Image (cartoon, rainbow over all chains, first blue to last red; front, side, top):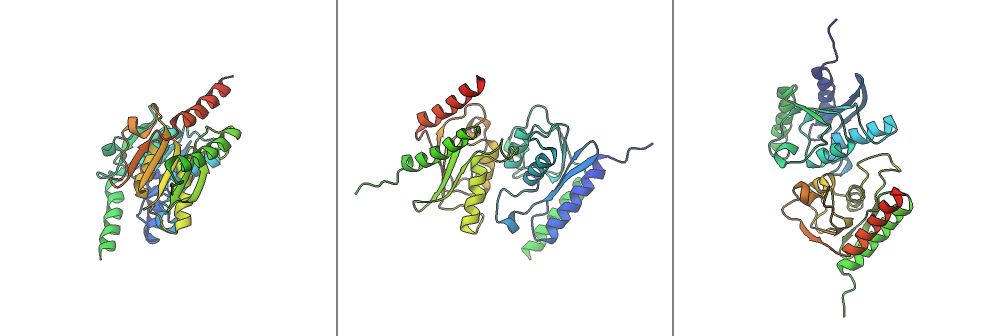
Length: 147
Length: 147
């Protein structure tokens, strides 16, 4: 039997969260955290609504997952996020010791890769999952905002 | 007339916050945010109590200050923190565009300087204010924990 729980399957859920952010006028980034094929957190960027630069989707996902698990380390968890994490989020993911990070679109300006932020040595990174869809939503948002 | 509002004056307040963390069994890091010589946020590390790797003193200080100011940018604000910020906190401070960061003790392992995290180009950094007192509290905490 085919496994339906692919990276694309969960990235679609992150993209749904990004769409919710988009509809609220937030930079459209969404995230889900998964353990044993079960979604334990769904979050989206809320920096405008909360007036808080720390309210990125990933930060909320980490806090929410830790709350669900009753412990602060996200071992055996995978974060799906539509955009490459920034320094802050990568730094938080470092502390969380998360097992795997899957992201969609690259952030060539502020992403952790170009910024040189270090992840935990145990963390696996997969990039480019549904990259075009994730990037398209961002482009649409900024095109709309410029008008 | 002598200005009482020196960096040491505010670092003492951050150190008081670190002591509160110490007394709770948290890694003793404290922070205050100051604007026009007025303290607008006082926070301390709560990662153990909240089971949340993102609950560093600085992260709470940023959220709390933005809430006080009613805006997410911390222009004209100074953060006093007893320990050099980590990648996550420096990344958050980058987004906040804070004017000045004053820290006490260096963190040679996980501090943003050794990790290469970038701050906002507008942010001024002052280090080593009450360094010995800040470092002594950390040493006391870890010595006690090893017992």
